[in-house]
Length: 389
Ligand code: FAS
Ligand code: PHB
Image (cartoon, rainbow, N blue to C red):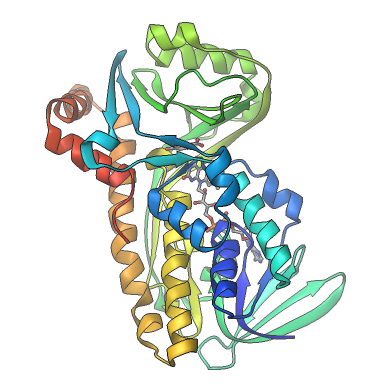
């Protein structure tokens, strides 16, 4: 087989890149190791920045998002029971859209099928080769048959545990990482959300987040120590802990029900530099990871491939290498600012085992400064709704 761009991974980054390039008449093949259903079964992000909404529209998959997505003007913080709403629309004239990553992935898969472009699911043993030459290749086994794809470029959209970043010679890559001493236990339930907007709560017992997927489906998280197991968290224990961590009014309003999904996500900050190695580009979680506190993971994946699609279009349509030469620096500039915001949100909203009384007072003071300063609130608003591309 031969194609212009071989995309490894059918998560949001790979699928969106494929769709953006298709719109420019640039042929791609997506190679994914899991099944469609497995990819769709992963419950992850829920909040889209305005820039992500615009990229999905550009990719031709904005219709259902605009019908079913919930536009939110702001979020609430709750610090030891004290609540405060940050109105993004009045602070900086921007909003966010609540529309689950599962639905984004579903829309992109449907568009991919309609495009007629090749998508290979359940591809085993994917390896990438010769990306330091102008004739890179991808090899894999599909239905027991060893296959090879010759291509011009490889887009590594295969996530944190993927093969692409792992295939870069170690001396060519610098990584930066912080692993947090806790994770997020997430629960999905078919009950109305506890509030109209997201509520980020900090309590001495730990962080909690009240989110949603629709007016009838809610998504909740509680911070748990690293190493916790889902089986040790029956639904009732989850609900009790959530009630502890939010204010009394929210706890009273909470409508509980049987979980339809429950999972624990580890939290880490991670960046690999650079993001281009000859004809190989890294994008999305293959390139960086943020703790989900700032709702940036999916949005960074989208902005990465928005830049990459532009660069590859410039290469094929204008025969200019400028975009691909500038890809890594341009993406990393925005990635680091999202890393900072996600680390800051995580630092002020979570309890850390080694935080002393001074550190806890600093967390409270961050909250007090935020709610008392319009400049600080504007800074939160511009980061949460997404810095310019
Ligand atoms: P993805 O990991 O989504 O997709 C990579 C794809 O590559 C996968 O389908 C994988 O099967 C495939 N792949 C891997 N290795 C391969 C190989 N060798 N060959 C072929 N294919 C291969 N972000 C938020 O904003 N909010 C959240 O609440 C949130 N929760 C999360 C919970 C978890 C458990 C995880 C892991 C992430 C979470 N994220 C969250 C971040 C998440 O949304 C990512 O940012 C987003 O999925 C990134 O998309 P991709 O870069 O496409 O990577
Ligand atoms: C979610 O709804 O899954 C969600 C929302 C906001 C976050 C993280 C996760 O910061």
